[in-house]
Image (cartoon, rainbow over all chains, first blue to last red; front, top):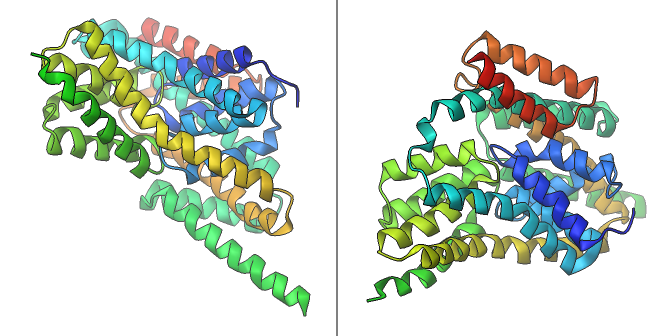
Length: 183
Length: 187
């Protein structure tokens, strides 16, 4: 990993913050593109970062910035990354709150967003596929991924419970294996 | 005079609590924000809240941040504060929302750095990674709704972006801009 300047950390996350529409997971393709291209993390590390960001409360995208910023430059890095990811939406929303109230019904804005929405969906689908190919090395991994997809998308279970259940199950399993190996 | 000064600590506490209790981000956060600012505090009406959600979905940035910024400004305006004091309200609620995550994620990173490399930690992570892959796939599946895909043109845009991203490794930012331009031209 290259050493990153605070300014470049701020700029990278400001760019991510400025172009994430719809929040949360829509940010993942942008994070992946920015950070992998700058050599700040490996593609395989993304699931670890997301799992960790999901285990803390709050806005997912902000949690990712805090984590990545800290790994790059410690406390100052996490501060730069957080301010970067929050600032664009802060300024834009402030401008909207101050200026126009009927922004939503503006026909030009509506047309532009009609084009953006399906693009955002495909942008989330591609990294999911790429990560699956990189990280899912056996049939169990594919089963866990498929079960999570179904439980979240079709059953409507919160990701928090699924991640917690997996941590507990995997922890018990690791503990059991450790005991068996010790005998 | 200056009745609204008490709103700052109230905004801070409200959004700090929201920041602590929302796991899973985004949409999970919306219902808590709604109960806090519409029902408990009566800071705005349901229809004003619906407007905020619509604006949040149309503007860049995480929805939670958008809501906090917008609420902070609007609440102060409604109470009769000027522009500058209202901007301070935006800042207060946004800062309060991010603060709990900041503290907790920093603690988690320290734990992660200490644990990573240990074989048990790796065992647990090997279970978690595929689940995260499933979560992201679910995020894409959940977004396939009539509002996002009203007609065949949106499916064509979806397919074009999918191909450009997968085969050409086109930059996501470029694709979002192109999607916006295409939407403007074809609708």
